[in-house]
Length: 361
Image (cartoon, rainbow, N blue to C red):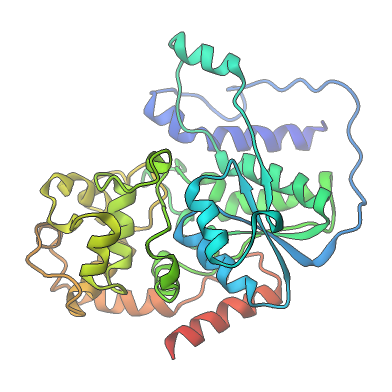
């Protein structure tokens, strides 16, 4: 490793472990929290031939990757779903989209047994930058398969800090900052013509939910929920479930949402503290992959305005934004504005713009 690489890895681990430091009360700085001592010879940058018309699309089983897969499969690009330790929802997503497992690239990983021993011994445990791991695995897979593009499904909302006024972000390795850093690392140390970008970066959570609503074949099969991955279910009690319910509420009828989640989450008073975290009343957002308070408040306003939900539902009433006209303008802006901070090649960006135009017809 050279000095630039060492600095790169320190930045990744420092910000990628920001939530871990915060929740465990660890005070440190980027320079001193770890020491990297390189050994051996530096690897050579790859010159393997890549197909600029082939794209790997990581699939997690949630609504975001479903939108990416459905939009890209109808393009002139050769699409290959990429699954890392696939769960049932991921396999369903590619099947419903018309891909067989043979057409997908599947990678399995295991945890080092030593790590499990350390957990049992009482060492601190917590959130790690998983999407950074995914980025490297996807890059090596792209080199092996000849794909010239890796299209993630991270949206613009992932850039917002979890703790206001800080750089602590549960989604740091899904942020545009990391995307920029990883693109630089790819070009300098792995392959100069391998493109890594988030296909959904121009969009916010409301726009993605809007597009997802146009794919009813996926509505009962997706799972944007890590805790329930082993049981392939929605728990209905956590920030991720409530956020997904709310963000879809302007676009899907209440009856359908209840069937998807098993109950009306907006009537569950046990979720009052969670709603406070989601809508910005609490000091800190949930340490989950959820959208911004602006998106949550705009979605609630629109769902009431559309009469998809009742303004008297306990969580809607306590949120207190059913009559806030600012959320009307917020909703219109969020649903139409495109984030220009992205790395999409022009042909991919055109697909996104066309999808929003077609959905509005």
